[in-house]
Length: 227
Image (cartoon, rainbow, N blue to C red):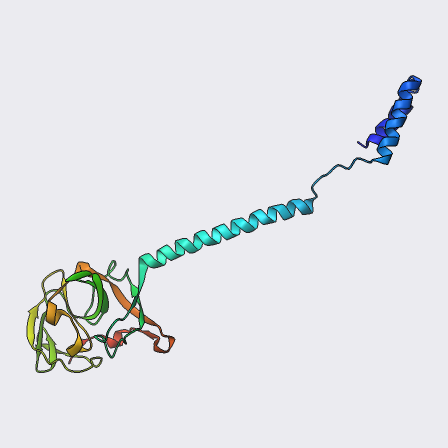
């Protein structure tokens, strides 16, 4: 209630106040008229503005949290590697960046022709990228410039040149036989042996950098036996 109204009501309701009391009330009323009291109350607009800032910072926090969760999920399911060297020419070039599907062999198994990234068995701190040629149970033979799997010659339009080496390998359970597409300039199963499957990181699915080399690694590039 307005203090001036209170003073006025007191003078009207209690006319029999002593002259001293009536004088004091009148003095206080004049003082209030001279120095009015202002009550500060936040308006709905100000309350809305305050709540808006809280909502703004909450939105930022939620965005950061969602981005972090998405980053962790993407990194759990995929990896990005840089091709270092020429062992996969002409399919993959030195310096290209490749997207790796980590989940591919959690729900499936490697297939002949897959390009995979794995920890090098002789140096687990080093990762290599090669093509799967032999699967568990296969017999792989390199002879007269051709690769034969279980007696059938592979049709390999992606290789740089026919292999100049010879040899025969039987792939046991839990292992793979891998070769680089640049057959005569690649450190792979023909030189250091079979690859344990538990060393495999994932399957190469996409060349994404540089943009001019952008390419989905498709099934058309897989090794197939000649008919």
